[in-house]
Every structure is written in C-alpha cells, then in structure tokens.
Image 1 (cartoon, rainbow, N blue to C red):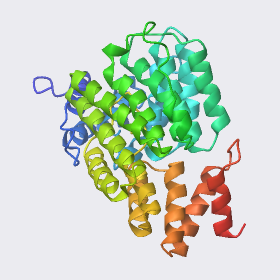
Image 2: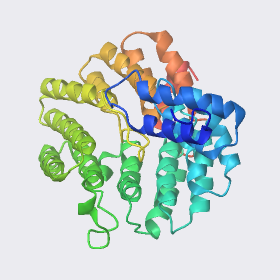
Image 3: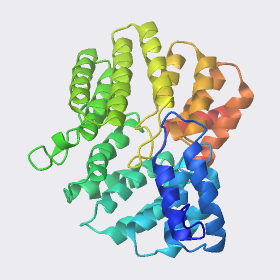
Image 4: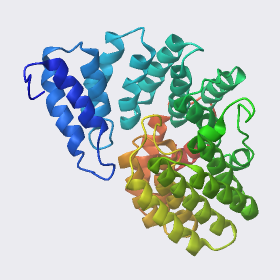
Length: 374
C-alpha cells in the first residue's frame, strides 16, 4: 500500500489484514476503525465493490459500531445475489443491531443459494434459528432445526460443527426448556462426524446440558457436565476457544452452586464469568454468546431478591446484544420488582413490539401485557 498509494485493490486487502488482526481486548477497536478509514472512501466511489463491502461488514461487526455498517450490509446481498456467503454476511450486522427480520431474510437466501454441499447453509440456519427465537417464533425456529438435522450434510468445517451443536442448544435455552437442554445429544453422532476435531463445538453440548441440569435442580448432572467442559478445555489448542470454554465452565459451576442451595456462591462465580465474557469478542462463526452469562446472572439476582442489580445487568446485556427476547422479558420483571414502573412499562412495550409476529403463546408476553394493563 505504501508503494502504490493509489491502488485501491492493495488498500482494500491491507484493510482486510488490519481488521482481522486485532487485539480481542481492545475495546477501542483500533485496527478495525483504521480499516474503516481506508474502506469508507473507496466504498463511496465504488459502492458495488464486493470486497470493500464484505470487509466493511467485518470491520463493523462489534456492538458499539455495528449500526455504522448497515448501509454496507443492505447493499451486499444485491451486489452478489447468487453467492451464499455474500447473502449471509449482512446478517452479521443485522444480528448486532437486533434487526431479526432482515437477518432471517438474509440467511434464508443464503441457505437456499448454498444448498446441501456448502457449509454456508448450516451457518445460515444457525443465524436463522437465533433470529426466529428472538421474535418469539418458536415454531419457525424448530422447523429450521428439524430441517437442518433431518438430513445433515456432515460437512467437515468448523462453522458446520458449531451450527450442528448450537442450533438445538439455542432452541432449548432461549425457550427456558431446561430439561430439554439437559438431554440434548450430539448430532450427527460421533461415529458420523469428527467432533473430537472440534472440541469448541462439542463444548456447546456440554454447556447446554450443564445449564439444563443445573436449572432443573440436578446439581450432580451439572457437575458431570462441568467436568466434561474442563476436559474439553484441556483438549482445545486455540487460545480463544480455551477462554470461551473456561467461561462456559464457570457459568455451569455457578448454576450448579445455585442448584446445591448456595446461591451466594453461585452469584459470585457468575459475576466473574460475566465479566470475563464481556472482555471477549464473538468469533466470526457465531452470532454471539449462546446465552449471555450476564443474562443468566441477572435471572439469578431476581431469584435472590436483588432486582435493582438484575435490572442493571439486563440493561448491560441489551447494550451488547440489542433486542434480546429474554433480556427484555427479564428487564421488565426486574424493573417491576424494583419498583420502577416506568422502566417496567418501557421494557414490556419493547417486548410486545418485538414479538408482534410470534407464532406461539408466550408466558413472558402475557406477563408484560399484565404490567401494561392490557
């Protein structure tokens, strides 16, 4: 780039290198914003350049700056309407800003274009499941999971491994179906898919089962999954995933303490886990945390009678993960218990707006309606 300062292709590739080589602990997003400074002027001159748009989306794929990537996101699918990954990429921004309907449309097109021979279909399906669940569309989410697992491609790719494990996990955890979560089996089976190659994906299964067991009151089952997570963490080679699995293990440990009747200890452990998770960034193959540790912490705080603390934690989650169903529902409940009727009404209204197209009856929505006097 220094040798050829007017070469926009060289500048574009240099921006990609900048945006993908960053310090995960840098919350000022120094390299990513340097990439943006290079790419935005090129984007203004060449708004249909697929590389520029793609790398802008990656550079903006962080909560505080994601909204700045909406223009690029809404253009990309039109620029490359037959490329499955190009059709999916806008949803990285849509998921960051909580634009769930746009995320579903983007990923439906990507899955259709990718077909059964590409990892893109399963990656897109995972994003679709998450988006449907945030809208209260449980039936639609279940159908996507069923379709994905009915005839799995078994494509040997990290994004596929992640999606296989994440989709049934999301379906259970986002609905608060704890016994369902505790019983999730790996699919495809170990003899049909190389799970040991993708320990970070197998850890998702242990995490789901651990949370499900703990929330069902089965402390022994939760401790068994905690041991499994610790073993998977030791078998993992990539530092990023080692830290993610360690966070998952802390969450399960905290919830296990709750199941054992030691809520105070559980809160201490979950607060540590939430702080660790907040210090990390999501991997490109994920939509974000399977379930935010801080959200689980906030629900435990409601149980412990610490409604004001819970409300603050739900609000922190919503800053990082906008338009999350369970955080809106939790914030409304926490505000009501904390005596903050104004915020209870605000979050109840937001929940009703979010779930206007829900395809099932939702207890949290009924509670919000009662708070609003409907």
